[in-house]
Image 1 (tube, rainbow, N blue to C red):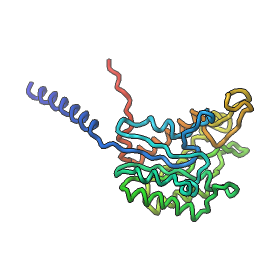
Image 2: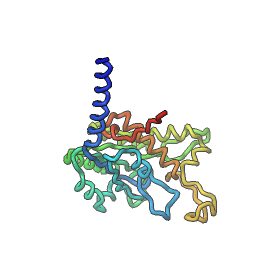
Image 3: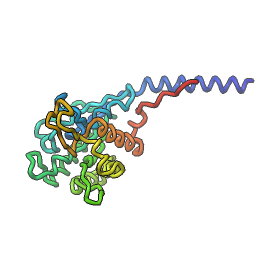
Image 4: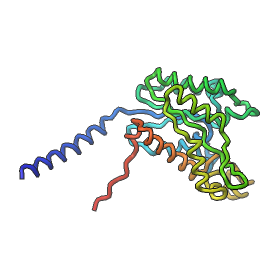
Length: 255
């Protein structure tokens, strides 16, 4: 009887302690920097959706997600437009900075083009200045575009710049989420036709924002953004980041 009472008391204490611990966890902020595949959109762009939008709802009340990503930006233009400085200014020890660029850096014909050496240097700067604030940088390779060959095999569209991200992550010993490879695998799983359901593919008059219709194999719709965010979430768990402890846990159903 005494043993049973002791076990009950221990159980009550454990539940109470964990509740106290959870409510007194230090608050942290996850800062997202990147391009349109991550950013929050203006209403006129919907149903185009960046994966940073659903990502913000994965965490408990001890986490705030600040999304600084912006359409069309590269590492270079993000710095030149002074978009990085407010992020650094607001960093606290224990915060995270998720860094995902490449779509706009890698295209020589774009004004946002960033040569390879400069791209690496910019990523290293983000990492260095994040660590100076005792925050945690996480590098993310650019999300795959929807492009299949004639045999129905997904094609690599970020080979050079994704490899640069991996290289910097290895050299700087920075956590890496390889969204390029993971999203390629997901698109291959969906297949050439069904994968279109993850992107902004609209027939004329299907959506008031795009009366002429739109076929876009780079930008996600709501479903695609959620799928990308789920990949990032799974990788946070796989990397055993402290942030993983703040993921919302499903409610336990009571009989």
